[in-house]
Length: 371
Image (cartoon, rainbow, N blue to C red):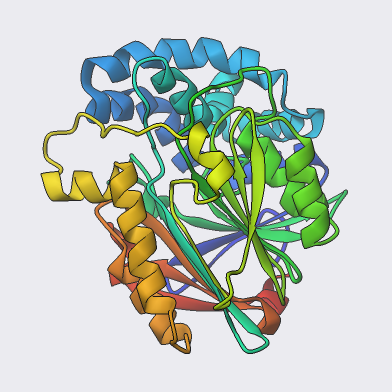
């Protein structure tokens, strides 16, 4: 693949980005200009669609607040956003807002009511010496995002090459993979928000791009102040950790005695429980009550975690079983689903035009073919 070139594999687009932060951003913006312009034009409508009058009220506040939060983003990532803006020929303020929408949404809603925009599920299991991990990413804009999934392949001038399953115009890495390290981001609702900290979009990039190994990644996460609650899962070829993060406290969880981790949107470490607050669902009335309960409440988060634990206990988990587990905890907002075997350097991405994407085809990739 040439830099800035888009290829497709079974309908999933792959985009190679290479060079300086600005160059990678420009390639990103140029290649995905149509999609970025559409998001630029429709972001306000999307907020209003899912959140009604509050969404319309939130949008101008988000635009203003993104200028403040930008000061805490390292210069290289600001340069990358500038490149996206100029490559796509859209206003820089819109690109910044697109990358910080998740962050700003959590901060904004925390002053009105606790809210979890991500309703995600993840597991890691160790079969002998082999690790398999899987993740579902659920998001509010679930009717729009499945067709916008992109496999980004980054070759930065500084740091490590990596793969990110993401969306047009976004610099963050909700799901990232390298030869020796994987990163999975899940949200968690917390009591307090610190607006003068490193946004999670920049944090995930720093960890996957610059950490030398799993231990180095943990140190990086523990050293940086956070703006919002997160469960960050790091997986190497032979180990895995969850770093439970709030703006005021952090703690690390390891594989349990049975060799697995189940992670959703709540904290499971005792000392972190006091940081948690119960989220409330969005105001879209068309979502059935039972789905609201399962995907937008702490109780639902715990049920999904228990469901995965039951499937992982005393079972040898292969690729087929891993996909079945993710499907069993998927829902109307599941816009991204990935399974990976780090030791074999291979992964699968679910492809479907509507959620849950776990009901679609699974596309196989070798990390070596991409990196």
